[in-house]
Length: 254
Image (cartoon, rainbow, N blue to C red; front, side):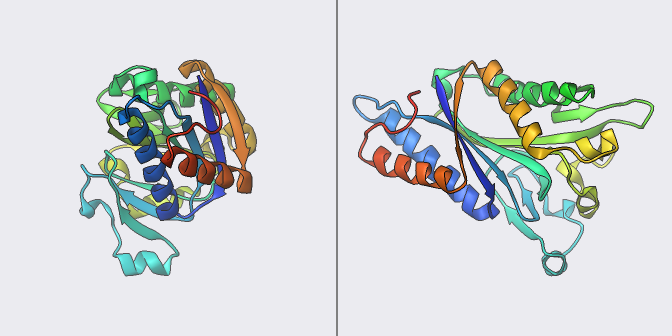
């Protein structure tokens, strides 16, 4: 199977959210058509301006500042339709939104989340970092170790409709961790947050991190990746949405 990887650069959260919803809706419509139409799977890779998002199972109390105070700091607050609690998105993160029809992979949300986590864990291992899981808590963690207790390096939260996924993960690469001081990250007050740069003591090359992640993602999901960048990526999505609305196939085959 092929997955179209769309490297979109820095995109506002609401714009990326709307793109996800449109692509997901097209995939759902295609699989419900008679006969079903087979359309490409997608992975949107973005970086967001500073924004706090609150999942359906979260509480507003985990945002520690008022929205006007956030605005003064150049950040937004947006309640969203994914699972999970509150998290931060911003510069220095690798944010990925896989839009996959799990009918073509495995119809198991738990396994899907664990597979995404595994791709991040393997990427951390490429940098000599041992990352793992905490029982009962979604995401990827480092520690406990000599540097301190468990600290989250990647948050996950998804939405799935008719086995088509959206939302995804936020992997801290060179992220300014001070942003997390303004929330109770993921509603967890007894654990910290970290980044690749913080753990390594140096900035990381973000395109290299993304390439390593994609290698592991492709291997774990057993897919071939076809990449589009910048304006080409947006053009591909527009073409996909246009062609999908006419129940024709454009781009990589599933």
